[in-house]
Image 1 (cartoon, rainbow, N blue to C red):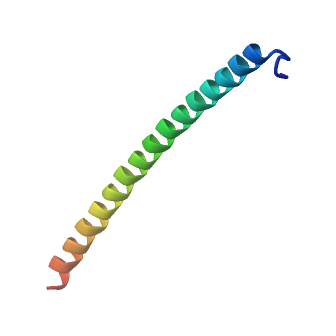
Image 2 (image 1 turned 30 degrees about the horizontal axis):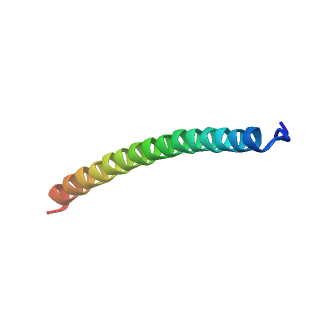
Length: 62
């Protein structure tokens, strides 16, 4: 896709390209935030599991 040769059309073309890029960045940002949120939930569950195991071992030893 090459830009049109006239000034007004060229500006419109570049503004539309910027808008498309911003939409893609917004989608990417939203997806990344969701991935990080899910990873945080996963890490919290893993930490809770290790904590529960540690408590059981502690009860067994002491």
